[in-house]
Amino acid sequence: MEYGNVQILPVRPESAPQPPAATGDNLRYAEFECRWAGDPTVLEDVILARVDWGPFEVTCRPHPRTENKCLCTVFYFGPLRERPHLMASFWHVMERFPFYLGDARKTEHRMRAHQPSKESVSA
Image (tube, rainbow, N blue to C red; front, side):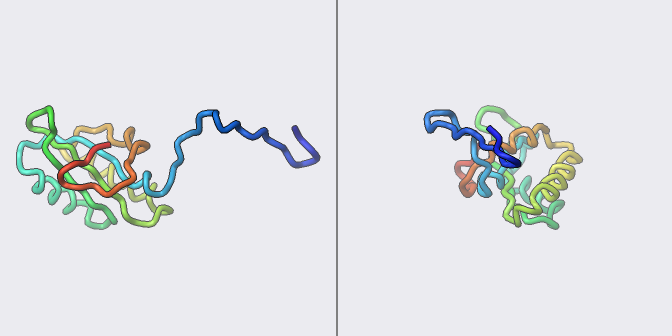
């Protein structure tokens, strides 16, 4: 309905499915895979040495089902208004690494809302 210049939108019933909320915390994480046979902490150091300009934390662990792979999680802890630009820069750097396996940007919408830990990090 429309009254003058004001449009009245119907209220969605409570039983209707709600779209996932894009809160600040769940926009701060993304998981990605790397081809890496060595120590995951060395991989973390290699990545962080190239992205030392940004407010990032990276944790990596051996892939649970695949040899010579690591699962890594990037945590962005800077201001949300700068996140789109800085995360795009982060992925640009990652795409230049020969060990980066790609497709992480597609999983950003599933970023978790809790701190990553060395023992259990997943998206």
